[in-house]
Amino acid sequence: MPINITMPALSPTMEEGNLAKWLVKEGDKIKSGDVIAEIETDKATMEVEAVDEGTVAKIVVPAGTEGVKVNALIAVLAADGEDVAAAASGAGAPAAAPKAEAAPAASAPAAAPVPTVSAAPVAAPAPAAAADGQRTFASPLARRLAKEAGIDVGALAGSGPHGRVIKKDVEAVVAGGGVAKAAPAAAPAAQPAAAAPAAAKGQSDDAVLKLFEPGSYELVPHDGMRKTIAKRLQESKQTIPHFYVSVDCELDALLALRTQLNDAAPKSKDGAPAYKLSVNDMVIKALALALRDVPDANVSWTDSAMVKHKHADVGVAVSIPGGLITPIIRSAEVKTLSAISNEMKDYGKRAKERKLKPEEYQGGTTAVSNMGMMGVKNFAAVVNPPHATILAVGAGEQRVIVKKGEMAIATVMTVTLSTDHRAVDGALGAELLGAFKTYIENPMGMLV
Image 1 (cartoon, rainbow, N blue to C red):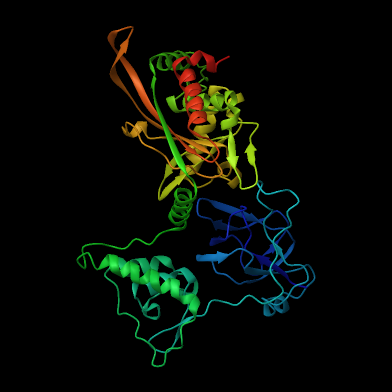
Image 2: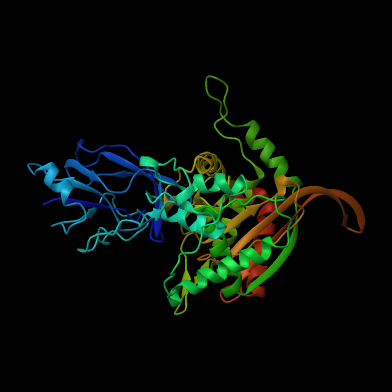
């Protein structure tokens, strides 16, 4: 019997992905472990490995298709000894043992079953009708974007596989001023109730665009990352009661220790240092140690219980094109400053390439958002669940302070702790921030 290859769930929260590239073609023989495709999620591009052996009988979803739902049929594999043509002709029919072609994400429980497609055939997206009566094939995302922009998708020339209209084709037309809007059908069918939200959304967009002169703007459709960021942060501000605590930290002792440690770094034969510590590396360590010292703040909120974490897993916000991602330094309280520094350099590089694995950016117990290097003096960050805290770090700058009744100059950094008030109230947040300040102003404590 043919084996259905389905869109795998590459993380516990993944609902859909873009089939960026096929690394095999119809007729290729594959074995378990072969990389067969690249899937784009909202924050990463991941390789998919085959689970079974056989011959690729039919590729159902072409490369470049966007918005493919998890468990949707994407290809059919003919088992060893099976007739390839017969397997291809039965594409989408029930199979004896349909399997996803990727192992469950590492962050998912080990006992989780491999996702499978249902026995029912997977319906292909309905093609749009072109003006000349021919059928125009378009990805679901391209059709939606065209509808929202009032563009007749049937009038577009597709650049995808087999002339398929994809997202960038619609974006190009929108940027160029659009094409003739689709004419209404002679006898439109009654709209189901489920279509109402989409209509309301379109009216809202139109209401905004009417405020601006035509031709004075361009429309840049939201990509998956921006949609995910918007959804998560909106939910955070709507469902989490935020509370903010700020404190000023003197940095002179930390900066002196950082210079001393960097100067003492071992060097390779070509003169490259084994590590180069940044202020942010030391901030990560200080926050992790503060959570170790104030364990009641190292928590996550659930409706039924408080989750108290045994380690401080510190997420660090990294800006990447189109948004940001938060790779996590696991058990940062027990790692050396050099280990944290080198891990962050690796994460930062791979984050910008969108090569992080889900287990490297999902979860965590707290986060650091540092905008000091951008010259920002102070700000308040938004809590990113399941975290109950996030530390916003401003720039270190020379300020006049008072010591023992006399004015002095010191390098001072303002930090603001945002907390989920359900889990970390004001007094507990102040205690955590006080512990953090102690480590920053007495940095030798991070080395013992």
